[in-house]
Length: 102
Image (cartoon, rainbow, N blue to C red; front, top):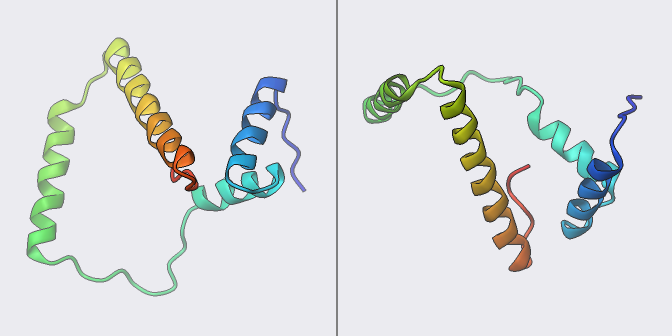
């Protein structure tokens, strides 16, 4: 068994999100943990066709071009991503769906 030490604010946030998804807080956390555990494949991954390989290569090239070690750019990018996730989840919750992103 694992015990987590959460601040009252963290616990309240988890409880709120869990209730919005119709789960008990412990079940919600268990689902989050399972979602983020590494996947162990029992069968080999299918081969990537040429079209998908080209798309993957292009995305990797863009990622290399945009890479930065500037702390302010990294902070801003993380803030933008967190805002996007929050807004996507809020929209789903308001429409009666479960949030897709932790």
